[in-house]
Image (cartoon, rainbow, N blue to C red; front, side, top):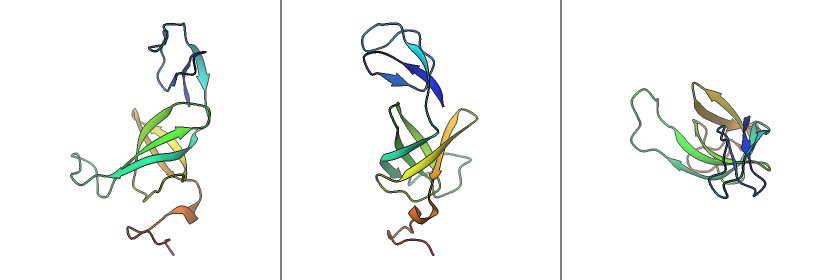
Length: 109
């Protein structure tokens, strides 16, 4: 995963020349394609073209930026997820299949 970072600790997955926080010149950066779920929400009304169910997850990349990604998995906070970019959208799936849960919170068989 590529993006930009600043000495002031601001980081983003987009390419930026100038930091929006402090105004310094930003450097190119690269981060792993894994992170931890910080928060998530289940969408009740799906945008056209998406099959249900879908969740949106806020994912923190280790020592990198936070990003919002789509997922069809049922996640919980602190789950480790792999992130992929498809047509400009970020998708995430649990790294460990044991982390997948049913809607009631029980583990899948």
